[in-house]
Length: 224
Image 1: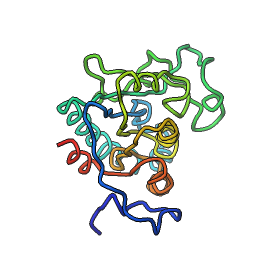
Image 2: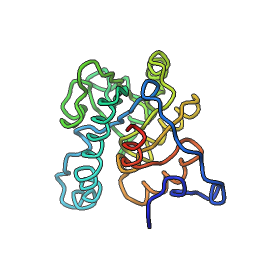
Image 3: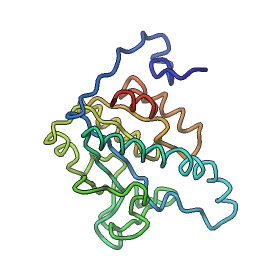
Image 4: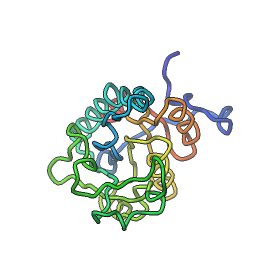
């Protein structure tokens, strides 16, 4: 089936809604926000069972999300669009400044000191020049950071979102941006969740309520 962002990822709420109007982006008022594509998330687990369990995610990151996000930010830079980064990183070595959600046992128990290798962006997505990075110990890149103020000061009205995980930090950030009245585009093939099912479900929840789900090809066209 041919991809069409106007009809894809329709939840129950918007199954019968009319198609949205065309998107118009002003490069001077648009930013790309890259969320949490960090070394810790692309490291293959040592445990063979866990490595097998995470293989589809790691493959999607390596073959789709990282190269597509490289293309996205390269195109943004060419068009004078601000590129902003958000990464999970605590200020203290023992993580005492982390939010409660990052101290609970399990997958989200993250100790990522800001200077450590694990907390850095993957090499392909290293910020360039004076591109802005915010550090967060929350899921949302707006909560607990000055990102909203930064975007306001830059004159940004539209935010193009890429990163991981679709159903966690991406989702929380998109909802926060929408609540702050930014126009949001979620780039489907620049994002990933632990499983494709979680990814697809969350995009259906977010689409048309909190932003529009698009693909890299759509953004390239919009920025041409």
